[in-house]
Image 1 (cartoon, rainbow, N blue to C red):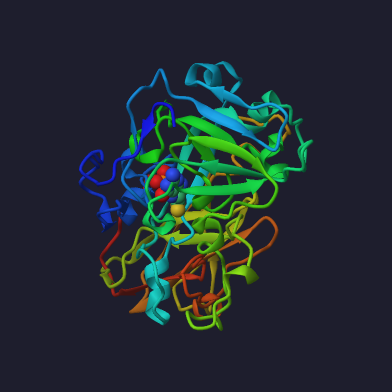
Image 2 (image 1 turned 45 degrees about the vertical axis):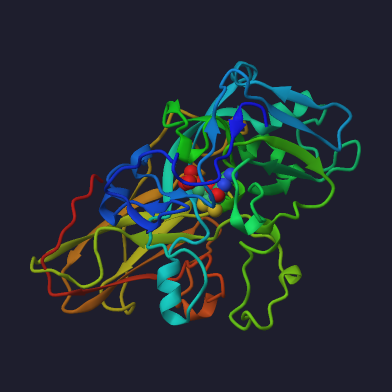
Length: 397
Ligand code: MTE
């Protein structure tokens, strides 16, 4: 692991913004307040959720840092940051979302295991770096390949952090080679976040960004990239981040029956209101974010202030960034939309938001229908209970 070391304890973790809500201190897992999350279209680094499974690695020798790339290929290489920076640079605005986003609410139905998150384990950043497909060409894998010359079908990313789930070993994950070699999938080896050098919490000096896929596959502090035959056998691929049906519990679980989760489903949440807000005005603002995985955009966000009997459509906002991909896709297909509706304040009611994506997928009505023992992918209609009424949270829409 040239240039990168992993501490065994948390004493050298970086400082963080004091306004973050800490869900677990060691390892550090924290999210911004609901209000801060939608205060801008691109989430400032300070307010971007932090999801870690061990102490934050240290780059002790930036010049000496190399990422090694090899496996089932005829040629292996080690690339320095300078060499990566010489490849064509792409800026991709993409929403990263932890599969555990909204887990706390799922636990209210039936207890689930995992770090508790409110609705802000999600953020929208402009990631800058080289495309993985360009890097793989250097080791002889052409664009749009599903299999390497020596039979590799997956790309495994390995870090250096010491995770207890891996018995003190590093975090790792893989994605299919056909995704990694597809220029239109925009998979990045990112060294910048919002125009600045990545900070330590978010993967300095180099991380993977897999747009439209759950955050767990976007490995931080990258040490090795390996072309492998079968998907990565690490804990976070095989014993975590899989979606089970409500009938499976800890007594009858068979991890091998499910695939590692990749794309995330359509999601939205109201950020301008907290549960039990007391509101007095005639009107309230219902604002939040909506996003879908796999490059599917958001078609619509529906709002109800009477528990789902009547709906109105919210206004949507998505910034038109300068980036247009080479495969002629919609500029911000990986990014969230922010939504807003100003509605008559209801009497003691449930305010609900649900989003529909461009494939007409819609969020499920109840959490019970999608309950799973690890509490992942809670995309049920987002409901906030308010009482007659005074609370309007400022939104920059
Ligand atoms: N990479 C490493 N090396 N270690 C980790 O703990 N956490 C993953 C992913 N990559 C993780 C990692 C998970 S579960 C998520 S949701 C995202 O990083 C979070 O990225 P962020 O902390 O930059 O928001």
